[in-house]
Image (tube, rainbow, N blue to C red):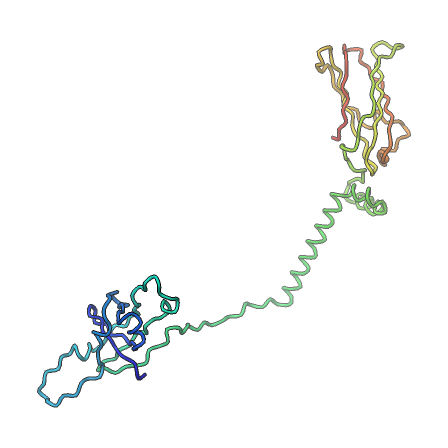
Length: 284
């Protein structure tokens, strides 16, 4: 390059390649990339070619020729002032490889990148792909069967046509298809507990259960608690659907939507003394 120059760090004697534009950028100020010394690159310009001497006996200063070998280091320009532009910050000075006897070799570009061997990922064989597909399909089928088993009651309630299929499935799995259990849609409309005047110690419980939902619901259990005058529990008993539903009730079909179920139960309370009662609905 016609404007190519060389400058030497006065501290570590490292030689760098510079240009007139680079020297003019900071008024000649450069920073050694080896020892970090800040110096005037113009004042320390050197010529790498040995000067011609007419007198063979003349003494040659080896410092003018530069050391036989130079350790190469990148160096950075001094920190720019706050008003410096981004273009000035991006400027860099290339390192200068120096060979013995003053010969110069071109410096490698600073933006060159190493080459990497790109290896393709191992390809999956056709048999492995088929096995993965079969495994995924089996897992999907198993998950579907598990969901059908868990929500079988709701499926039959919303889709009555599925009852025969789910009934056969439960015959194999040892389960049963029952109406859904939604205690929030059930309510006790009325209830009463009276002593039977014809039989001492015999109580008659009457109540009306109502299904307020849009689906048939399973018959609930009733919890009857007899209390004393201080409203403390004296005796408590749970009544199953078979204990209070009439003989004509279809327990497997459940309570139809928007329907009422009458309850009448006779209770032998001859061994207790009670003043009141409480009645609740629940599913076990």
